[in-house]
Length: 236
Image 1 (tube, rainbow, N blue to C red):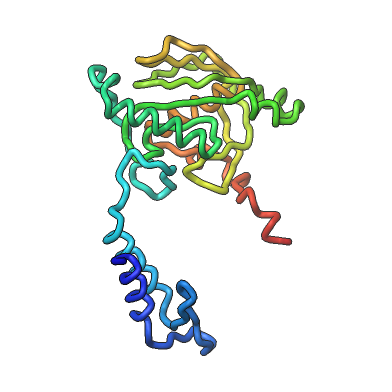
Image 2: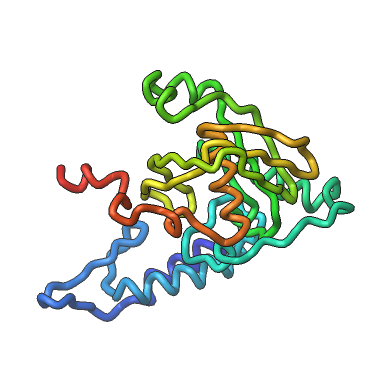
């Protein structure tokens, strides 16, 4: 097939030996065909061939955008009320929910799937709650939250006191930090009536509202608390 021919041609491209700083030969094994080349050349050529075979995806993505993507630092635009029930906005919302559930995260904003619009979603399933130790539930104020989607959300702080807990984000995959958040808030949007909430649900809303303004939790964190959540495994 054409794809097979492309892959076989790729295996023939890297013929010249490539040595690392210690003088050792670096090998590259591709589909069982051993050749020698620089990783940089192979990677760029693989990307080139991948895009020839399959075009690059476009938003709304089925993945979560990672820090460094400009969309995460942009100020999201308001959604035209007349377009909310249209196919384009509904596709964005449906994709957000699918991605949120696939990655088992409890909140997601439209910019995180590459769409700079003011839409956020949250959900804390009963199953996830039951899998959380009781002491942690009580300490963090966890409770089951059915799926909620807010278009053009507006938030009002009800209790100006803050509480600090470790917080993570799918757009900074693998990391976490202590972040202060207001105890109680009220949020409203075009598709949802006003909702007053506190505890972890209030934290989720504040986290996602920040995304709509191009703010990440690392902008609010205690920098000394910033960790790689898998750090113990590196010492094993």
